[in-house]
Length: 68
Image 1 (tube, one colour):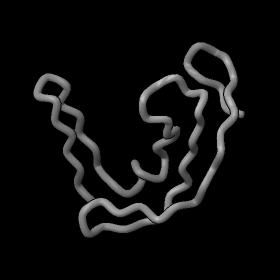
Image 2: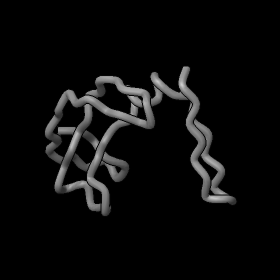
Image 3: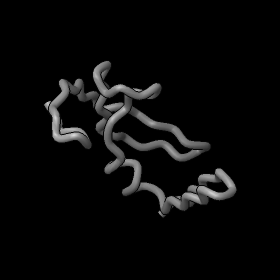
């Protein structure tokens, strides 16, 4: 169970998965839940943010990733 933005709890299923972004591969603990209430039911970003420097440009709707 994890606590979500409204303070409620939902069940989460954790998997240690191999993730590939371009030619960069790494293991990440990924959480999935069918009770999240959004189109893409993936939870968590810690492992991902440890591998990349991430820049969100909301105005241009661009996500930029650079490996650490």
